[in-house]
Image (cartoon, rainbow, N blue to C red):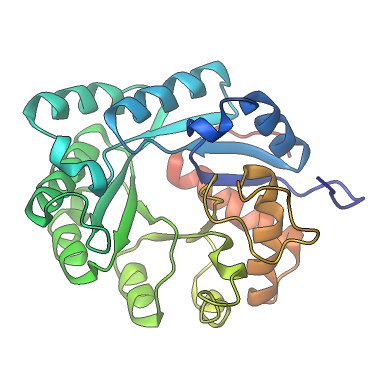
Length: 274
């Protein structure tokens, strides 16, 4: 993958699904490419009990570079009974785990019944408050219920980030009012679905904006030359960073500095290479 001739500004990918089976053939090479591109730290998303355990184990093999979340995505909400809550609590307490999630509501797919989604979301917010870690949040087509549940627990939470933000101004203003951070992905590079996002970027205060690839999903559509496959990976995070920085009217270096600082503050990450 081609990189700029200058030294890349250090970036943090706050959401990469590095345990996805598409990375099985070359996971270590993917991590190495990301670091060569200036992605100095990555948070590996846990979306199920098994996936969270795998994310934790992967982070343990790359201490100081990889970190994990532990949570149950709303697609798997029906799997989160009392015994599974105890397993999740044990994972969330581990030092490799820096956030609880991916958790929230997804009424677009409805892979789990909505009442099960709401129960699982509330349980994970309680858990996050108990372990004193922020929440990594997912919401799709469920804004009203998502915000209502989040408001009930927000005062007890150690922060949170609205992962993969793709919504409009009203939702953004609501999340900022709830003192959430905003996670931006390559969706902003999508000329079909992301055209509304650049106009919102200046409204996000420095310190509340973070970037992520959501790899292997959401490959930026405007990469040139186009990659041979549709698999996204953290090495493309600088491309996302440039797009968001341009929308904010900031230099890539200034943008990298404040988003990296914000990610380290929220997830309590140690300083990495700079």
